[in-house]
Length: 593
Figure 1 (cartoon, one colour):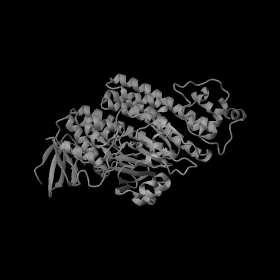
Figure 2 (cartoon, rainbow, N blue to C red):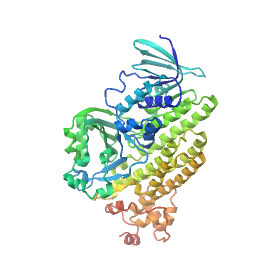
Figure 3 (tube, helix red, strand yellow):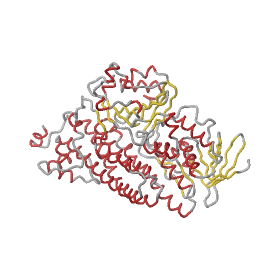
Figure 4 (cartoon, rainbow, N blue to C red):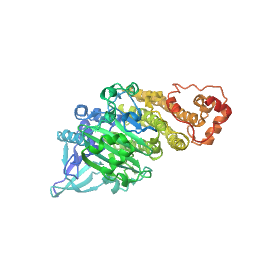
């Protein structure tokens, strides 16, 4: 064995998580870092998936890691997330046939469409400029003996045909789906999410706005733009949706990333098991793509049968940690992968830079609880209400809620460096835990509502253009982006206000669903009905909903929302007639008509 060297940190895996963690440590300390990678080529020859980032990861890569210039030069600025649905009664061969939901305004915190190979190459280049950074690839036959006391961990690996030894105060696993430490320490766990994905990259830009029979002039002057705006839709992470699945279209410089994510119980993996099968499936499901995709040159492709999993623990006061897909992963629907890297790396960096063992022992349990709580909050969205993707109205209710939670309880603390403040964390976790039951109930409620709609409502034949921020509580949550440099006490006040904002939003969602089920829009402002909604125990039961409204149908007291409760009326107008079920009584029927 070659002479053993000492490092402050050994990082296992030179993907996005490991390279980012090394960059963060190098920017904030003089720690000596050894980064090990089993592959010879970094980045790899094959194209890497996971391009879309959202506000937490956008802020992390641009501001925390100081990559803003690189991102603006080499990657597209992203135009939020956009969602599309087919319209009943139309061929859906043209883009203008599709209903759309979106956030029309660009985010105050820029987000990006990352070419993973490019950004990983840049991170490696920057890290190699530091004399405190050592990189070994390929490093194979890795062995790690974790210390049980204050002594360093022992690491060895094979490089250039010889076994090399190293000792380190910290070992961080960022090995991705290999899950080196999780396997070694028996930390692997399942979660309720059983989803698969198939994806590919094609040459050039898939500009689906041009998949139309309209002339260029008609396309420019299309009256739909009064609702949708003029920014290029293709810059977004675009989701073409159906029950339990979505198809992404993500632009990169010179190529386009395309992929299907699906509930394994609803779609047969074999039907999309090859690139050609995937393209044929997409062209059948969304006929506009038949104008383009069959003629595209496929550059690379891959698939994952079952990609979601949990982990029993991701950080320890014994000075080891896991980040990225080496620990936990949920689902790519809202692009949370980069967020989890950003959050974990920030907490891990703080732990590594905490020199006092007593202080570390206080921080680590809080950090593990935070990591677990933020992850668990995602799980109902993907494990319970994925079917809701099949309906624009139900998905609008779902996403407006989720985005409001994300903006106020994920983004706001992160951009204020609050997640590494122990005084803040104790209060934050208490507040966040109060959202847990409401969040779980809401996902159960919306999934049941969607299933009811499938059987009891005629699909709308008119397109709907819906800006999620028409619902004011989401705008209020987004306003926290402008609260920067706040004290811990000020942050607590902001979150108290946002907690009330979210409770009002949840109550409004339930009241709106009541109004649709009961066929009476006045249910939304029926004061005794609205005030009787228990956010910690509500559920979707048609008979219970109708019986409850029947008790209050003649009440004249109006509930006063702090925003316009008619913002979802376009869905009500286009909801179609009921297939089954009668209005509550003659009086309610008369008023509903």
